[in-house]
Length: 209
Ligand SMILES: O=C(O)C(=O)C[C@H](O)[C@H](O)COP(=O)(O)O
Image (cartoon, rainbow, N blue to C red; front, side, top):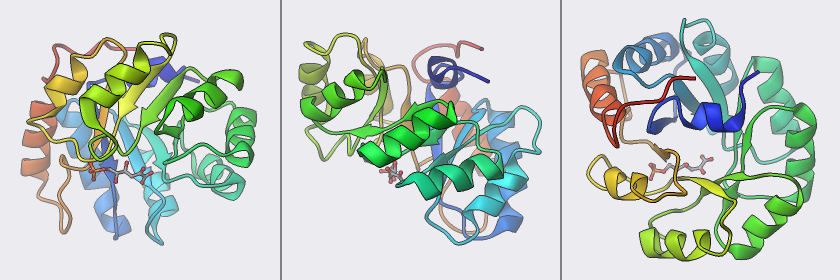
């Protein structure tokens, strides 16, 4: 099992995936891995999301996690599908307890100092900062990371290929999440490889785990 900081340092970007057709799972995962983005966040927002995880875990080199994990049932379903990490938009006690019990790396969404402090109290150290842009952007995260100096972040929400380098330049930021790498609709795998390569090159060379 990988540690959360190993997942977060596989590449500078974790692509956030909203996939509506299980037939798209493998070609998308293969294109992302080929492009240098092995950590994949499959959001549990579509009816086929758990089947997408089951397909993507078969792709060599892919480290597949579940996103939009909202409650203990989602944790159980993600574990059963083979997810290797969990990402949520927020931090609740029932979710955090289930995620910690699962022993999978867990990146809970946090938006303010109280969220992060509750997470630190639970023994968590790595957080999603969400919704990153709408929630005050880079100045907000820098202001939060200063007193909460033990916390490390994956900002997500509204980040683009153009703005990602500024986020990655923050010391407390290990990677960013974003949906821009895989546009909606029928996958254009050549375009996904191109976008993945561009994302993998952001913020310097990836540190392999
Ligand atoms: O589904 C979740 O668990 C979320 O928390 C939401 C996603 O992280 C954002 O929707 C990605 O944001 P964009 O890159 O702006 O599209």
